[in-house]
Each structure stands twice: as structure tokens, then as C-alpha cells.
Length: 211
Ligand code: VGL
Ligand code: ZN
Image (tube, rainbow, N blue to C red; front, side, top):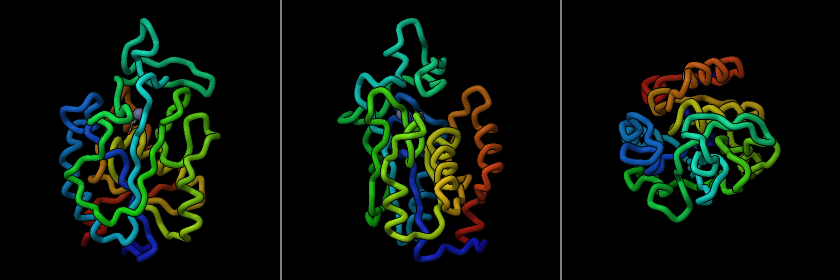
């Protein structure tokens, strides 16, 4: 595997939305610090795809929908264990908007996920029921793209699940570590890196790519 970026490679910029940035309802520490680096990286890619977490106000992943439960606790749903979150990325709200500080005018696709009330979706490819597809794999396959490079928020949830599903879909996947930040709830960040390593996701620092 070469670290040089090829013209058919794709940068996937995950969930750089106000609710995940400082001041947002599910702020990821240091999330704002990665914006300039993501802008620099994006200039090296012909192909850029953005993802956008996009929930109805009564989404099942919100702790407010489960009386007696608090954010960061879990519940058992039909598809498995679900972490409960503060209300975030509600469609039409400011918090759901992608940061205006991202400077990626050449981004080709914004894929929204998490819009089904009863199913969460960390991954840009597949919802948490592990069945409902977003269409991203179909899009990338139809475009006949090369390697996927994943950056954004949060490293241990939407970045990791997107990277893992990319590998499962047959893509070569690299995560650029310093262009991510994690939530790190109950050891989730360490677990996510272990899962990604086990799946064959390549972990690099941006300087290895930018030279
Ligand atoms: C995310 C928790 C809930 C993420 C989205 O973007 O990592 N995390 N929804
Ligand atoms: Zn969400």
C-alpha cells in the first residue's frame, strides 16, 4: 500500500457538524482543532464525500425519548444495545449544520444518516440494524473509486463504524488519526482502534500523507 493519494481515492469527512463541535449538544473535545487539517487534506483529494448525522426530534437514540434514562446510559433495542445521547443533529436545527469553517467546495456528495426514527446510524454505509443501507457503497462502487480515507467526528463512533463498514464492503480504508477526535465514553476510543486494527483499517498520521 502506498501512502500517496491517487486520483480515484476518496476522502470521507464524517459529521463535522456544530453539535459535535465545542458549544454543541454532543461536543467532542478538540473537535474544532481538526478543521484546518481537514481543509488541508481535502485539497489533496479529487473526490470528497461528507456525512451528516440527521435525526428527527424524537429519535430513538436520544435519552429524552427514554423516561428515567440519562445520556450515555444504554438501552436494549430490537437491533441490540444502543447508547443514549443528548438530543443532537436534529434536522433543520443549527446544530445539524455542517461547520461553515470547512472549506471543501469540491465535495461531491453529502450523505445523511440517522433519519429513521427507530434506527441509529453511526456508519455512513449502514444503519445500526446492520441491514438498512444508506446507498454510499452503491455510490462508491458505481464511481469505481480507489482507497477510502476517513477523518472527522467522532473517532470512536461514526468514524470507526464508517471505516469498519468500508472494509466490510471491500474497500481499502485508512483513518488519519490526527484529523479525528473521540468521545471516549467508557473506553470506547481504545476499543474502536482495536476493532479497526483487527479489521485491517490502516491508521496513519497526516504528516505521512502530506509529506
Ligand atoms: C455520533 C453519537 C451519536 C458521531 C453520532 O458522529 O460519532 N456519535 N451520533
Ligand atoms: Zn447521532
